Image (cartoon, rainbow over all chains, first blue to last red; front, side, top):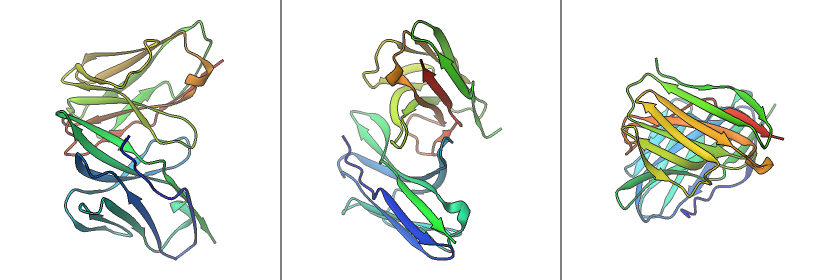
Length: 112
Length: 114
């Protein structure tokens, strides 16, 4: 498999900051996505990184280090509605086929 | 229209039934995907269609049969399923199979096999 690893659960307080780490196998790497998924719903796109560095989008930022096979998603000013599963997904290319593979997801619980 | 629409939203079927899941998009995307997601697990790729041709089959059992009748539609035909096939089935699309411009997911069909 692609060995996409992320923590299972994280808990934080409303208004706080949480950082979700993701590591992946670097062979065939072709881009990394972060998705938010509420229970029983479709994943919704949050961010995309293909080059090293930080991408900022409002309260959400995502960082990538290709040489380390490492990314993180930073959620600032947490709100109750941010309680969800956050999926790290990596696009790999193998034998000219592109595949999007997901990590197991990190369940974030925001407490008042 | 920037959505992927899946029908039905919920489906309960017996192990001897034949049913179909439908997926539709009108964004002009030429790649479409089926994923299976069990509770508290990540989505797992099943099939990829590129320009209406099957390009990837992730060793999915033959009781799942995909079909892409045109560039906007993707079906998943189900026959003789097992209770362990109960899951959320997600359809997705992208402009090209490379996914360079990102992926759009439908809201899924919640399938229960009894």
